Length: 266
Ligand SMILES: NC(=O)c1ccc[n+]([C@@H]2O[C@H](COP(=O)([O-])OP(=O)(O)OC[C@H]3O[C@@H](n4cnc5c(N)ncnc54)[C@H](O)[C@@H]3O)[C@@H](O)[C@H]2O)c1
Image (tube, rainbow, N blue to C red; front, top):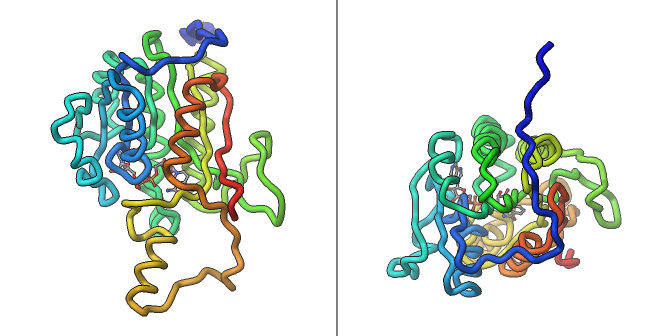
């Protein structure tokens, strides 16, 4: 039997912080709720950064979230699909870091039809990881996952070492892509960092999500849709705090590790 060649690359594991200024960074899903806020955070913080924003503009993507950047030549928008391996390969050749936000993100939609979730979250993440292999100039790849991969618990907090036990097709597809990313870190030495934030809220969130849905319905005097008896507990994380935490993980995180991000605000 011929041994399998993995092209394992040498990853720089020095304790020095990764730097973003002067770098070209790929953001996938950058016209969505969290990705667009994150682009603003990077541009505010790093005057000489360049952002390549790859987004398919699904119903959840909205270029108006970035309207103020129309004259900012540090931001380049590419209308495209992460599931297209040629597209990813073309872009990866000219970036030094990746923040991968693009996903189908609404649990209720995944229960009705999980197909797009599997294709975007699992296949799409695979296509990006393939592009990453053998490109040493790409110094880090942050995969944005979710705390929902752990499933539910009655009390306490999830730890990164807890078992993955997703309970919706959305969470299952996120968990599948997490596993692909972790496997690439082990097998190929890919510089992967996984972040698992809790529920985000903040301006420009698509109105199907819990807080904008409830506030708009309440303002219109309509009834509020509850699951079960309405006793489910969630941690709520402000979108800008989430962005700061993701940026911190990208600068200082250990490759191959996952990092939970919560607000301790249930
Ligand atoms: N919103 C939350 O509370 C929350 C919590 C934890 C983790 N997350 C994760 O954070 C990330 C961003 O979430 P969000 O709330 O901003 O989502 P969102 O639905 O608002 O935005 C998703 C973006 O991805 C783009 N996209 C979808 N499929 C694509 C494809 N095939 N190719 C390229 N672009 C594509 C969409 O056009 C959109 O701009 C997701 O990975 C999500 O799973 C979200």
